[in-house]
Image 1 (cartoon, rainbow, N blue to C red):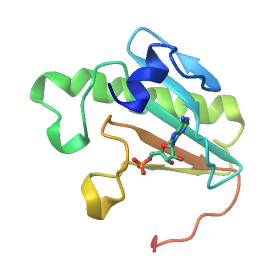
Image 2 (image 1 turned 135 degrees about the vertical axis):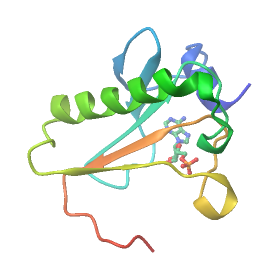
Image 3 (image 1 turned 90 degrees about the vertical axis):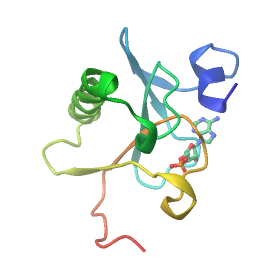
Image 4 (image 1 turned 180 degrees about the vertical axis):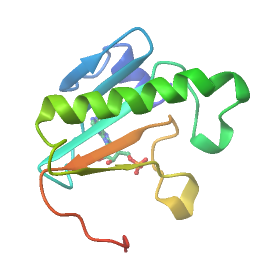
Length: 112
Ligand code: AMP
């Protein structure tokens, strides 16, 4: 069971900011910006590279939810970034698909 599945199962604590039937959003334990929330599907898709055609609606829901969380966190007007790390070079450390929502300060581009 991955770390995020344990959070989904409420086996380990998390600061949950939003939940619906399909997705969960909680604060990153090591925030890289004033607002840093992880948005995950409840289905155990390991990473975006392994998403299937049948996951299309869920992936859309995940992005719509991330935008809703951004509004609720008060960062929508000034802007924010959504990031999906995929595989070792992408910086993925937890093998359960997650969208990072980062905001609350200007974010440099390109990323390092
Ligand atoms: P990634 O490197 O894209 O796989 O992102 C994994 C993220 O999970 C990192 O930003 C970590 O800080 C975060 N993280 C690890 N453990 C926890 C936890 N127990 N609760 C919340 N976020 C976590």
